[in-house]
Length: 346
Picture 1: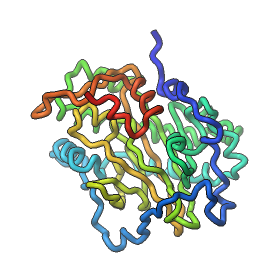
Picture 2 (picture 1 turned 135 degrees about the horizontal axis):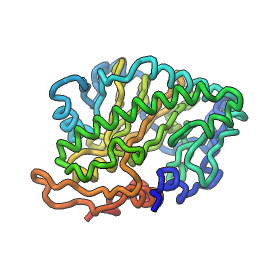
Picture 3 (picture 1 turned 90 degrees about the vertical axis):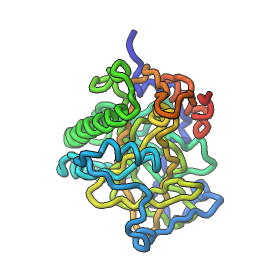
């Protein structure tokens, strides 16, 4: 039997066209009602100036002999960390960043040629989580699963290869890094080898999300990306500007990315695998009036038919979650969103 792909998993949960098409942010001089959130949002644009070393997440050197232990500790306490000496060549990172900016600099009518279809998972559009919120987000994105060529050809019929080459180089490097980090945490969780056979194969579920947050005329009334957790083992984010906020102890804490690091945070699948030991942090992105903001997020998960089971190690000897396949959980989250983990709780 042919395995379902991540793309097919999302196809089973289509969106309406109204939940896909972004507005033309370049012509928006004021905040439209469709994007005006009822509660004021604490943006705190100058947080990083007042608190230069206040990111709640630790900085971990991948070359540190104790990296595995430090990563596990960070996932327990914060749900993530800033990673330095990650081994990804600067040229690869810069190449992907250049293509991201080239894409979002295109005229709106050209970007619309790669608009994600209601039953589609890839291409141009607004966040898939939009239907769960009463207002739209100040964000436009471009989603890639596997090869970017199908949608890139729609944007640049005669000049798509440069985009594909640089994005595929980035995907390859990210996959290697994500696999290395995942191996570390699975070692800590004592996941047996027979439950890891999917690693290093072409069956892994990966998704690359290119994000653009335009400068906003009223940032304290707009939302860049609404609160959510990720359906992944790890999400690796390349981001240079502040705007990300992490929920910790009931408060939104701004996360300021240190130079030359990648932000790594755990997702729901790692939370489930660890039986709740590792956090899947609730996070959001706020808008700013002063500058536009870009980021690249790489989501790494097991194959869609993989059964995610809690690891019963240490004091956690009673399963907090029932077994669930990746495919099934994506369906649960498409219907239940923020309540998904409680749906599979035992």
